[in-house]
Length: 283
Image 1: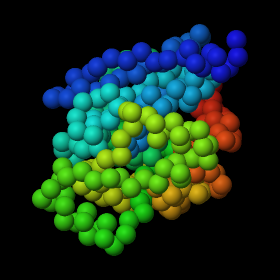
Image 2 (image 1 turned 45 degrees about the horizontal axis):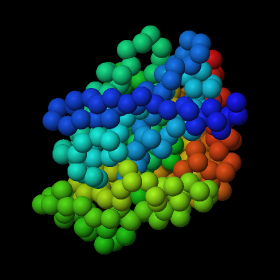
Image 3 (image 1 turned 180 degrees about the horizontal axis):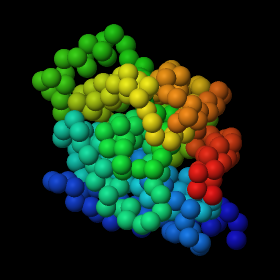
Image 4 (image 1 turned 90 degrees about the horizontal axis):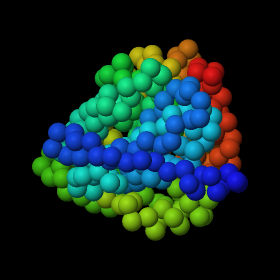
């Protein structure tokens, strides 16, 4: 059977997890045929959902890793208003709770966060370092492209109207360099283009805080980011990489790639860097 055919049948099992007053959709992909080298928890970005990560999950599965993930509040199959959070600590609190619930094996756990998910992982691990053994960040939202007007609105709106939602202004043609992936993203009914002022303010403020505290980072980590990213500012990743000790962080910038490096036409290069780093730790 071809790789494409096998991947087509490779699907996660989903379940609902009650996290306080809301439910989170959890995803578990099939287990490797042999004992897993480690477990990888995927954490997705703004407006999308974990169902878009089947190809990455399949690649990790082939390499011998257990893969799991979940939809953020207000995303995918989870409950909540699209693009909104009920409190400022929601995303990091949920990640902590989900890892405790889903990862109960003796294997090590790696958190792999993309875009907003990368920021969520960085912030959660800074607060709760015990929840993971290592971290991978893919095009993390450590810095944003904001105009003077955007900054003014984010100074005023969250204080009084934190749940007001607007278009997230993502330029989807800059998602990745694979036109088919962009078309599927635009047609995906589980994808939404909303963001509340409270969530936007959290991303901006926490990104700045992550960079301010970067010199204190002491968890083994891999940072992968796109040099031609127009959805998050790659300068944030470059600044983070410069501040963190090389003892704890390995960095790769893919200069010609757009935001979704795991969906780029040359994604096999990204996959190889990821598996090489994981296998050096767990292989």
